[in-house]
Image (cartoon, rainbow, N blue to C red; front, side, top):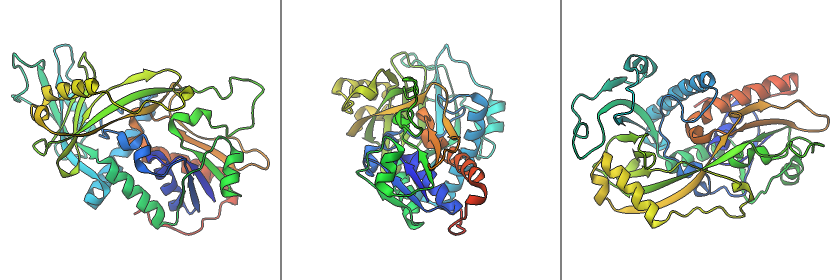
Amino acid sequence: HATVVGAGCVGLTTALELLRAGFRVTILSESVRDEQTASFGAGAIWSAPAYNIEPAEQAHEWNMRALQHLLQLYSLGVQTGVQLLPCIALLRPQDELPSLHVMRGTLGHVRDGARLLQQPPFVNRPDLPYTNAYSYLAPVLDMPVYLRYLRTQVQRRGGVLQGGSSVHSVADVRRHVGHTDVVVNCTGLFGDLLQLQPPSASPQEHVSGIVAVRGALVLVYCPAIQASYLDETNPEGLGYIIPRLGGYCVCGGVSEAVPNVHAQPSPNLQLSSEEEQRIVARCALMHPAVKTAPVIRSWVRYRPVRRAGVQVNVLPRLPASPLLANNYGHGGSGIVLAQPTAEDVVQQIVRELGADFTPCAQRSRL
């Protein structure tokens, strides 16, 4: 039996991989409502390189595996929430054009790779700041749909989602589920604070190495937009438009490190009207239809950026303790990298258990 702590995209994906490997799985979370997770508020587009992940070599390997997984989900149909859409990256005078040859090699799995846009309507106009642009086809995830898909897959395989479960230690896990053989920490923002190991004499043992990076999105109804747009060097803040199913688009964004968010009893998840207007104005530069599109809602979430890199490991086994593992700290790339990191941590768990592991049943990967 395995217990996963955390019910966001990484937690659900890890639970699904454990079920496929033959574990019985319980997911513990304070809330199992998708809209309460950081994942729900993600823009969720695959990009190369992976956003804000180190070390670069490991991030690239994960990112390419993620691309293959997302393309497979796209082939299964709209119920997964994965679309394959043109992504148009807009460049300002100071921006360097990436090597399209390298990008074509990276994106060769996607139909037309990367290509330079010769005369797009938004380049070299006196009223716009863009001097160049390139495009490629990229997987895009509609997060409410994708989270529902993951949850359904977990439940169909017998996984149990248990809300109202406040977990700060292994003792809390035992209190909620009784005996468990494995505990996997997928708590994201609070990952470094979950005390899986016995308390240390050093008070620094459980100080968080995670930086909370505030992100904000505005959801608009704009069926005229059929491609994603990126403006990553806008001096007024990151700008992007990412279509969702049903004619909606998410417009972003914000990327601000927030100190001591763990000490705040209730972090502010509201977006001010002024900030919402600034986001819409930045996105209207990329596509004028955003300017008149009705705003449906807006939201704020916090991305868990871990200074020491994504934590994907199995801890040394301790007497009379379940095997303890980590899969958290993905920053702004958790949606994309959830699958490869889940695969890696489950492989490590099975390898560490060795002869002690007897699968409940052989399960199809689909």
